[in-house]
Image (cartoon, rainbow, N blue to C red):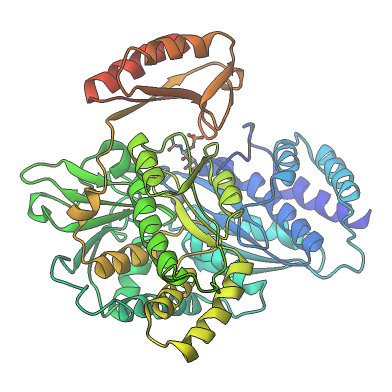
Length: 547
Ligand code: NG1
Ligand code: ZN
């Protein structure tokens, strides 16, 4: 048809495939930036089609997150602000890898028919574009625009340099018909953060909290945004470091800090004891740490501990909200509260959460799986150990809570119940409902620490992490490894699980699993045990089984 021909010519003239095999995976398409132009162009077409099919705004984010600065990537945000529906991933893969324009147009025609996407008379596609600070971002945004605009009538709105969660938030909010600028984003963060501080019970906000926070911005977009936003954060003294002068992600950022467990560039012994946080390159991951005296080592407070802090706070507030069990007819809505982790969650965190009486569910690695699971609860809290996570609230629960809050306002204004309702509502506005967001997560951590009157050390003592070791093994074909039960059991190659079990049984509190990476050509090995030496030995012996 005529549109296909239009697309055909553009691709023929401007773009050819770089000869790399792309897989959409858990983080969109990622590669060395110079190889991505054609892919990004194609994803532009895909986003426009998704927009037509859903009649909603779709987002495209150009970022390679914590990867090195020479890499880049592209991810699609669905109308809810979440990741692209998994149903479209096979098409995304095939489309990105189509060897020639003819095949590409054929794929497109077949897919449009299969998905019943009517191009004639459909509302025009609308796509929001964003990019991180990578120098390659600008030309890739242009290539994406070309792809979008090759669908007649489509519009592409460039939001410029934004964090990944900002772009996802904008897509979500725009689709609710609300204004969605960066100013609105920060306004919402600020208002709900201030509410949480205002609702701190008298006497709780004590001096245990060192009110200074130092943030490592990974020399990326998150650091820049925070540095600009900082003057409005009157309740908090923030010292932002690495907000753009150095090389993105080089010796800095949440990924580096979490994996290497050493101070990032720009931090040193003088910072010992102070509360520090680290963002990743596109600000969708957050970890905290404190510098160990006289060393470059750190005490890491990872995603599991952020999750635990959030869970503790929410559970406490739900307790207040439900009120004392006095036998009277309870007006409370029995909100389901669930916690979602992956096999990488430290075993001590899972034990702690279960001790709190919480339902803990494991999913495979990858935000899309955790997010989907968390959405099944009225309040679903998910985090990967690496610091990506958020809290999701169901629409049902939020509507009930709004009504309940109004009732309490007239019957028992200022009561524990009323304050709990206000706090939970504020959390639901502060924490990003679309995707994990380091900036909003950071403000929630800060508000909760102040609420509890806790230092980072007190927080870190919630439980003691079990020593762990992560290794990777380069393999010819990682797809040969097939796992089940949220990646905790290998079903193929056969017999390997039995061998892993035999090794693990040698170590008290031993736990070990292997899985194929979704983003690299490796098989990852994770081991946990009572001592670091034991965890290391277990991991190395299992590496030998895989090799
Ligand atoms: P893979 O390569 O599938 O292990 C990594 C991270 C994930 C997630 C994705 C997406 C680990 C062990 N894995 O996935 O948690 O963040 O990248 O970026 O950290
Ligand atoms: Zn990221």
